Length: 234
Image (cartoon, rainbow, N blue to C red; front, side):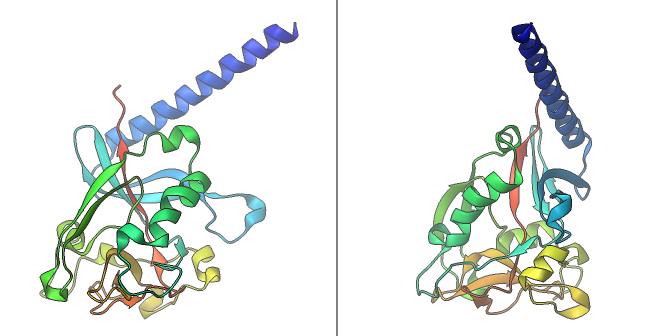
C-alpha cells in the first residue's frame, strides 16, 4: 500500500512539473519584445515572512527558440567587485561569480535553472569611454553591456535613451541601501569596467550612460540580471 501511494505521489509530482514547464514555455512563446513575463522568485517586498515574490522580466529580444530577459526592476544592490582593485574586468568580478552561483540557486528551481542558456558574451570595445576589448565570457546570468544599451534602448534624443532603460528598485533593494536618485530611479551596473579598472560602468537614472561609472566596490548601485531562456517546442 505504501509503495502504491509513493508511486501515485511521484506521478502527481511529475505531472505538476510538466504542467509548470508547459506553462513557462507557453508564456515565452506568446511573449513579444517589450512584454513583461515572470520567472523565478526573489525577495522583493522586504517581508521575508510571506516568502519570495515572482521576478518580473522585460523581453529584450526574441529568436526562434529563445528569448533575452532583463529584470524589470533593480532587485538588489551588490558591488561589481568586493574589493577596489585596479585591472578588474567583468570576467574576474565577484558579481559575475555571484550571479552564476548564489543568485541562480536562490532564484530558480533546478528545472527553471535548466532553461537558462549558457551564453557567450562578446565584450566589445567602447571608444567613447576608452574601454578596450575584453575577453569573451560564457555564463548563464550576466549584465547587459554599453553597446547593448544602444541596441535594446535606442536613443529618443541625442543624449537620452528610451524611458524603459530607467529602472526603479524593489522595496528589498531599497532596504539593502541602493542610492535613490531622480524620481526614485537608481543606477544599475553594466558589464564593462573603465580603462583603469577601478570603476564599473552604469546606466543612470536619467536614461543616459553615466560618464565614469561608479567605484566597483560601492554597495549602493543596483543590479538588473539578464539571461537567455530556451523556448521549448510545443
